[in-house]
Length: 223
Image 1: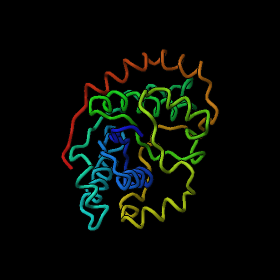
Image 2: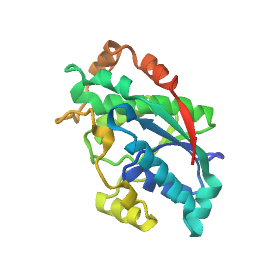
Image 3: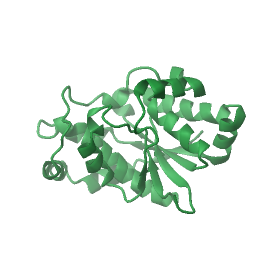
């Protein structure tokens, strides 16, 4: 792990990411939170749930609450990204939409993480739980960041993750429709072609340019 245990956490209002944050807090990690907002399309629900989840961790009694108050940074970085994600709803990119989305998240996470002094990027990703989490697609996603991936839920059954969420009190906040799926395809690909991904991203204007546009809208909120 090295001497520094600092990570940038990609957090959403879903079940998985707050559980991943809690697990790494228990391991003594300092965590900076990054949320990608599609509020322009989905409304504020996703952002509001994410903030509520992190505030819940900070409010807990006992050891986990103490660790959260000590090591969970009290500001969360918000990146509005709906306009950039909409570029990948075209017919030539839509089946790979979730992979493009996660590649953008990891590229921006790399930039923000390095600004925060992070050495790792934390996600709630599992293996094979959704289309972007096949081995090949995870590889295409993680290559966008030089930070070492932290995936503390990688091998857990979803039922066990739900049990963990209930144990720490985040499940009831998280339940509901996953708004990050709003622009996604009905039949996403599970085996993305690297060359086609890169061609589609170039056709959409270039991933670095799209991420720079999103970063220009960045703001921070207090937890």
